[in-house]
Image (cartoon, rainbow, N blue to C red):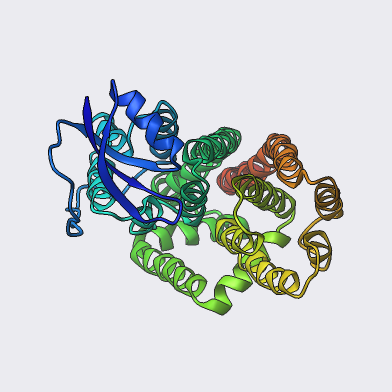
Amino acid sequence: MKFTYTCKNKDGQLVQGEIEAPNEAAATKALQTQDLFVLELSSGGGGLPGATKEIKIPFISNRVSLKDKIIFTQQLAMMIKAGLPLIDSFKALEEQTENKYFSKIIAAITIDVKGGKSLSDSFNKYPKIFPPLYISIARSGEKSGKLDEVLGKLAEQLQKDYDLITKIKAAITYPIVVVVALVAIVIIMLIFVVPELKNIFNDMGVQLPLLTRIVLGTSDALRNYWYIFLIIFTGIWLGVRFWKKTSAGRLTWDKFKLRIPLLGPLIKKIYIARFARTMGTLVASGLPLLDIIDTVSGVVNNRVYEDAFKKISKDIENGLPLSEALKKYHVFPAMVYHLVAVGEKSGKLDYILLSMADFFDKEVEASTGNLATLVEPILIIIVGTGVGLVVASVIMPIYSLVNAI
């Protein structure tokens, strides 16, 4: 049987032609033995594909969840490993993806790849969906001819990120719900209950304690000037958001996050786990170290670490080993650069980094559980004190009246 193929060689050049084989799987294997990456394979000489124009994606919903990307990456890796041509893999993924927006993105990528673009360049057109890590791994897989392997490792990393995020959310959900409920109770009391009691207190003609006068004044302010409070809080929220987008504001905010009591150490562990897993995955994929540092800098998403990675990159360019470069910056614990040094000496840097990532993931999970256990009673005490003050402000005038009698 004759097949028409479109492939890419190791230099990234498009190669098109025809091949004789008993079936599609045999044709794919024959092309792979020639160090060709199969993009499209069709029987019967249906003509060679030409380049297509970039298409625009109509707005449906710009949300592609992490779970969507995990499923996409896992299935793409399996299809490529099974010998399915890349174009056919994308067509299958387009049909079975439930997220309509993501499905249209996959269709656009299919057109780009069919037209001769590399997979990494096609991903690069959609940075909100495919971050630098994704693009770098795809590029390394294209260069090494092991796209299925590197995508499989990427899927594992994304799954671990998803599991960690899910556990963190589960740990903090209950304390947040409790605090929101208590705050709502205080607000409802101030707006609806306290005003009714104010009329009773006025009829009683008793001298009101200071605490009661403060609560009554707060209640009046909330009822009569709620829009001013809304404007103030909205202005503060928008101002902080704008400030955080400035270079100085973002740096200050990122420094502050690392110094928050209880939360700071947890945030550092999350960053270290993300750094170690990303770097380990990229080292295993065969990407050059300087390219890896550049990619990791974007993945960590903290200006303090980004600035450190920029300096580390220069140190490595000047001949310093990675472990020595990491040692110069306080944001990396001693454990990190000592283990990296072991990995450099043993030639198993990827294994060391991925093991380190697993360790810090477990540390994050344990710290999150401990933090939730510790913070929950503290928040309940703080908000409960507020509720108690409101209740006390109501009871105190009644006691004053009873004593007067």
